[in-house]
Length: 322
Ligand SMILES: [Zn+2]
Image (cartoon, rainbow, N blue to C red):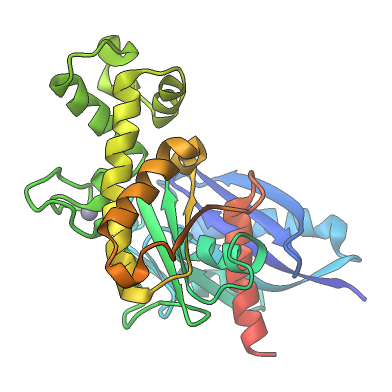
């Protein structure tokens, strides 16, 4: 009997990664295609479809595609659409699910990458066996997926869990979304770079960043510098953790999660980000929640986490119908 696999597809601004993932979370084949942000959606989908066929063909005797799960920016689970995605040229509402259905006669489902990551952790990672948890993705921006009572929350319109755009400071930094003071403008790879430049103005300490231009600065450099003891880099992590922990404490009040899982580039800084975030979260938690919420790193294998998340989305839907 052939093994059933779900195709997991993660659409990024630069690259789209895809893979064939079985029920246990093993990725049997993987590929990547340039997203080519200026392509129209129909051309893009035909290229991705050709790539899926290419990696599946050598495995035709071993596995059969049961469904497709897609993680994409501004994806709407209910409508199967992508709506004015940042970093892609598709304007307005793109019916991505129906485009894929022209190529594959299997269930196709879509959500944003952070929601997919939450389902990935639930099925294959750190949240196995949990019913209530939150996943925070700390990439260029900040995404989140909320699972309550064992189910991912999509909300009335399908966009639930946009914690990147809750307000930290109404007079604070401008966010890429057009609002002022969003969490994402502080707690993300781009946010911590902005913090370093603020601290360079406010602190007199020597730092390797005194001679670096803003355009060249990356979150990775800040992590490395903090590990070498750079006082500005260390203070930037402290500040980021303080802001993030404060807003996580708010989120705990909404859904009472068992754990919050930090995922993505900035989370790989380990204790540099986890320690101040945990401290600040505990400081700001309402009494009944204090000492009860775990702050955990992702437990998905590095490398194909986005594909596993998207495949987990497909598996979640397939299992509902069986
Ligand atoms: Zn925002």
